[in-house]
Length: 311
Ligand SMILES: Cc1cc2nc3c(=O)[nH]c(=O)nc-3n(C[C@H](O)[C@H](O)[C@H](O)COP(=O)(O)O)c2cc1C
Image (cartoon, rainbow, N blue to C red; front, side):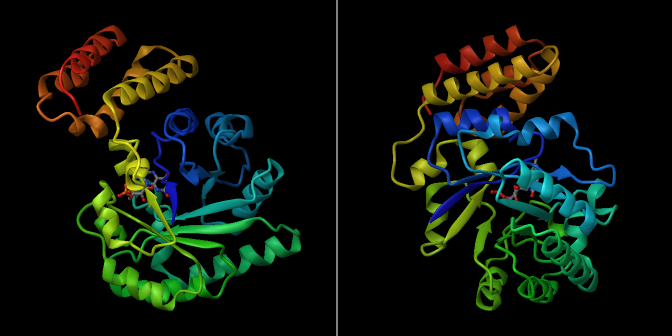
């Protein structure tokens, strides 16, 4: 079984990924949050840093690209392959309106003819440019109904996609509720591609439902408990000291990278928002973290949590 760290825009950038790989080694892949490819063919400074090979040396990194234009996609693939990447992931899953209203991300699943044309042109360009980079996709199972699933995966079946990561929810369902495991099983029966399951794996027992899966991708479960994969593999449980040291390292990385306290504080608060429920009964300390107005207030609140309760 392989374990992938899901891309989480605004959270799992290279600073977070590097610290995670150092403190909790053992994941097979880390996916970058999406890089938005456009006609200017210029990556933002933040995106360049996020995929710079030197910043991703500790782990197997797969860059993810968001676009609906085959020419822009293949351009990004070429640039990334020149950096040394052998696989690029296409985002067909993003449900956020700022993305879908532009026809990108999971909106591309809404028109299977257009999706077919996208892949047809993409693989034609890849061939004419002699690009052998693997193309994987991260997809949902429809826009508004699970009935859309099979026709979408029939389109994928026509192309030499290296792997399909399936988040079995529709766009409309965003990230809430149960995933459609029955639809995933249907896809498994008809898909020609290696599949990876993604969605709602937050504790080791959640893996009981996937005894023979070849790969799973985990997002929020790893934000909550960064040692989740180690625990799934039968390793030791997360200790408070490890979590504090890991967060300290992430904070240090942000302090070196960002200007001023406010953005660092916002990033750290977001991490605690996910990890907070590892500390049941520590509501007061967690509230203080949430309300901290400066790094020193934040650190005082974290110290209060440290002195408090075991995990
Ligand atoms: C804050 C946030 C940001 C995300 N950013 C991305 C992204 O950049 N690319 C992507 O493919 N998925 C993105 N996702 C989706 C996750 O990768 C993942 O598919 C989703 O959280 C479901 O998996 P989980 O239940 O294990 O978290 C994001 C999700 C969240 C909550």
